[in-house]
Length: 115
Image (cartoon, rainbow, N blue to C red; front, side):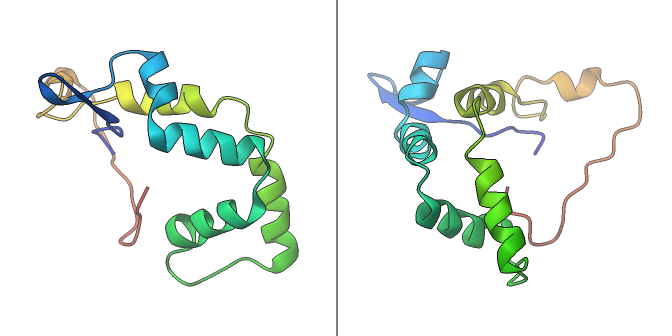
């Protein structure tokens, strides 16, 4: 998405976007996912894959699925990815950087993409 993925937290002003990598790391969604990756929780990751990646109902063969899960647990920079997604926003409603893009842009996504 051109908007990234904003991670919001509550402060005295209400809902605000996380401003530091530490705030992102401590965000409940990020912390839970990181713990599940650390624990190599195959059942949890499979549930996430089924809901988000394979939401069309088309699943890989079981052997390939298990290989995908194995590769997932090699992820060592999950918090960094979340931080980057939280910072990224070139939408006209975000940092207004979309108006600074001078070249052609192709935004590609499937009809059923959730991520």
